[in-house]
Length: 255
Ligand SMILES: Cc1cc2nc3c(=O)[nH]c(=O)nc-3n(C[C@H](O)[C@H](O)[C@H](O)COP(=O)(O)OP(=O)(O)OC[C@H]3O[C@@H](n4cnc5c(N)ncnc54)[C@H](O)[C@@H]3O)c2cc1C
Image (cartoon, rainbow, N blue to C red):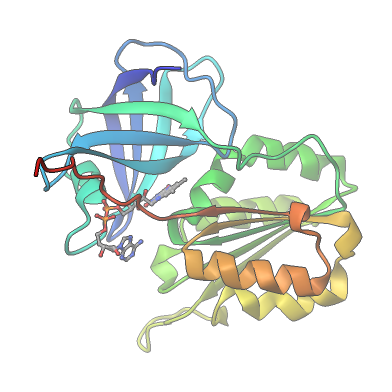
């Protein structure tokens, strides 16, 4: 089936920290975005090799029947083509896009423990799932864990939202962790990587009644997948989304 493109126009953008922006787009054709929380959009643009390339970005927010959706994008320095293109957009600018795509979505199942693990902007799909997460939490029977790893504490994206959720629901376990706390900063939380919380999970969850979602840098996803396997979670109970760029396909040269 032919890919359906649309123009996504910037409605607003907010800096979440020095190099991450929460950007609201709307479809220029005003068609509602048919989506499932956890899915991603693609942007299409002509890269520095002169051919059209694409980059994927998880939706960080979207609503039924609305043409608007938000992306949460980290600017990759010094030479990140897609992320720098997005960071350079002003309100009213637009981009060629397609989507949503992907299957990193909550399924119709009810494990006792849902363990969400993110690094950096890998938090975006979980932020998009907020209503679904609240619906689970308000049932009171099930627990949700959010293990969130970043380098510096200012990169704890949507931190107030997660803290507010933890304040409302005892069954929401928010576990932020920072790998490089600043010596002159006032961060007093956990230091290290998301794997820091493995012993707590080991003691608390039943691997036969748990499902894990891992999203972010490939190194974390690979590492945590092994750890969850050792913890006893089956392969199908561990779902992953790795944040990588596809290789650029250059046209074949005539010989
Ligand atoms: C399904 C999916 C969803 C994604 N969702 C998001 C999202 O919500 N938010 C988001 O910010 N990204 C997301 N990504 C990653 C995104 O698609 C790009 O890979 C990322 O923005 C880098 O693209 P770029 O064109 O800016 O840099 P590239 O041109 O791909 O890379 C330039 C250089 O930077 C290096 N590099 C690439 N990424 C990083 C990084 N994160 N940190 C340091 N160096 C890097 C590369 O190795 C290369 O040397 C997602 C990826 C996938 C597959």
